Length: 128
Image (cartoon, rainbow, N blue to C red; front, side, top):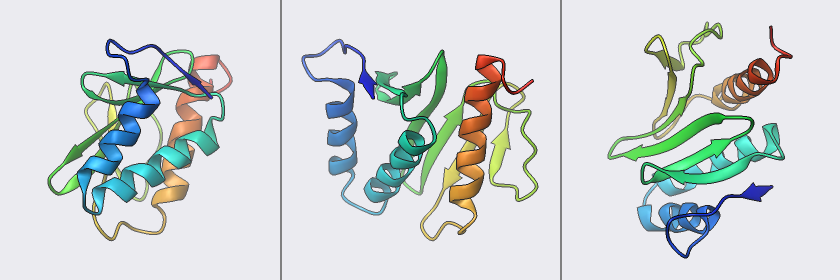
């Protein structure tokens, strides 16, 4: 897996590690699990630190990982076209967000992986 240069001396991966450690509640382990799913789904993903938040790219932005008081949100750039029968994603027309709350459904992993792989394939021309 690659990392890109940051505007600070720390690498994006180190900044993401610090973010995960600094959360101090269930959001840290959740962001860590989502990060692991990204790495499993796209092994050559590039970790970045954009807009003061974790971001992952592969031939363009794949998603960002934001944390809020009651949620961890993964926002997928231009990913509003994937069918979502379980209702895990929240589409805005341009991007699609996945919000994980404490006690998220077991189907989260499958739907998240499907979404991530679909986004990467769509950008590379394999998902058309």
